Amino acid sequence: MEGTLDSLWTMIGAILVILMLGGFILLEAGSTRMKNAGHIAGKTILTFGIGSLVFWALGFGLIFGDDAGGFLGLGHFFYDGGQFADTNLSTPVYFVFQLAFAAISLTIAFGGFAERAKMVVYVIFSIMFSIVVYPIIAHWVWGGGWLSSLGTQDFAGSTVVHLTGAMAALAATIILKPRLGKYGKNGVVNSFQGHNQVYTSLAVLLLWVGWFGFNAGSTVSVADAFFGYVALNTQLGAAAGAVSALIVSWIIYGKADVSSILNGTISGLVAITASCAFVEPWAAVVIGLAAGVITILTARMLEKKQIDDPIFAVSVHGTPGVWGTLSTGLFATPELASIGQAGLFYGGGLTQLGVQVLGVVASGAFAFVISYVLLKLTQGLTGSLRVSKEEEMMGLDMSEHGVYGYPELMYDDPNKVS
Image 1 (spheres, rainbow, N blue to C red):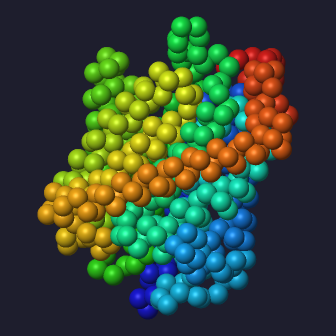
Image 2: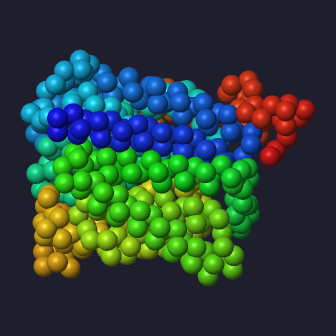
């Protein structure tokens, strides 16, 4: 009976995480211009399909197959739906749960491609990322790899999911270069406002709800209802991120910037993802507060460096993911540290913090370098990662798919800039 309940809870978590893709569709579409909205929605569904097939064929086995030197797993490729783990939890259910996490990381990576990458590039990189990037890091931390053996604490994926996706996004946005007209002469930054702030606000709410599947679902167990404690920390981290981002935006801009509040909320969720099972509630608030500040400052820094990250993948998922992973080395309590050791503020010294730093550096560097190399190889195969100037001005809805997401508003003037 307990195994059935564990499997049911984990399946509910998987469904919530998969529904987060709907949140990402609204977030990306609402944060970009109208002429690219249909493209963004469609490519998310397509790449989820591609990523699912690749994860079934190779990704799951590369993560959870027999450990090969601490680097990757081998076995259970083309997963047949059988039970292979010594646990009451249904392995097919766990497969779907882990597939959902891989899909989220891939979606985060594509934030760095927005409004200028060819459709074929999404297809190729979906396959490459789902074999060569995400499964390797996931094995290191969750599949019995070398970081796991050191006691790296990343409960639900601040590093494995979010930092990995963000570093791939950073590699993409560097290679693709800024969108046309984003930066003017003398470093002037031209604001490209997203076309629908209602979409982005609803998206963040959907992501917030889905995150309970992400974090609380990662308990994969109903025993002692510990998932409730994880959910409590998740809620507090998100709330604190929203509030601190509001305060910082008010100080910097003199206005309560809505996009900053939304980004702060997600950054709080990203940061608490690693530590939600290891820290006390007061620490979850501190982690979220710091994440909201970090995301605003990172976004401003990237703008000054003329790194065009349309969906804020690096500032929302990358640096808060780093902070969230490091935070367990400070705040993990002896009672909750089921993996690794207690943090610095609980008498654990610098040991766990050092392990966390190593995990962040190794995973982040691997994700960035391998993604950069893969994208350069893709560039060689396709001639260019980026659509032509004319196609970008027209919008990817029309140039890549032949129809606008808002045809009644756009068809009268195909070259209309929204």
